[in-house]
Length: 389
Image (cartoon, rainbow, N blue to C red):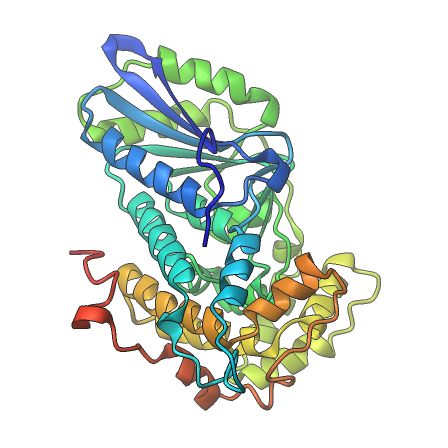
């Protein structure tokens, strides 16, 4: 499968700071796609982060997105869809349960490179500031969530909307959502509910709210700061610097409906959680109504997979979560709803996906377990075996 040109899809810049040190700035540069993360982007960004990590002159790294609308709206679904179509074999098993999950080389590489990049950000020794303005969804949350200092502004909109395309909250989403207070991550995965800046901070997906108009001033302050040779000291310095620009943030609907969401997610069975959401009297509340509609129209298999992965994430390290999500993602690319969801939303745009299984009753735990079975890896080793080592 051919790849798009890599020129300038990520812009890299180094700005002089005090005491001879430098600030490394990486800018996702595809505003027409809302900075959707492509394989080329992920490769370039990962390579530069490795380089900056080894450069004693780089004190702080900044990750941002070009344009006014988004930091990153998710992964490059168009390319993944093409790879899924091209990897389908002839005959009755094409797209069915008989597919081998390693048959799509592009998807295997995309998810491996993306997850490695996300894990690198989670474990980066130097302070890494992510400016999560505008739309931050799916793969965008994967980039932002591991940063040591995560900024949201007044127009930030975060979500895990994978239910609408037949995937599941990946990029470490199983680990992240399991840590949302009051088990509300189950609600967020099942409904793709939008989170504004206040709710993003409440859910543990962001750290600080800064006005978008302050970005240039923040960058100027980064250059004026006297950074230390010690990364730990610089983490504290960056936190104090950002605190100078903090702005009040409104309480969002996730917090306003915290008791309702907690009661819904207190159920142990997924079927009871889904029923509680579907029968909730939302009245004229737009946020709750949107959550109900997204769940009703979304992939039942995605709901089940998200639930089962969150349950397992509670007992796994982050590295093990990425390894498990990688297996599930390859199965989704081979024989799940993923291609059908992208087709309905982005290709044919009929918004009428034919989900399989079509009901939650058919998307049983046993069905989900088949998506968590590791294939026979070439050489016998999981491609992400070295994460966390």
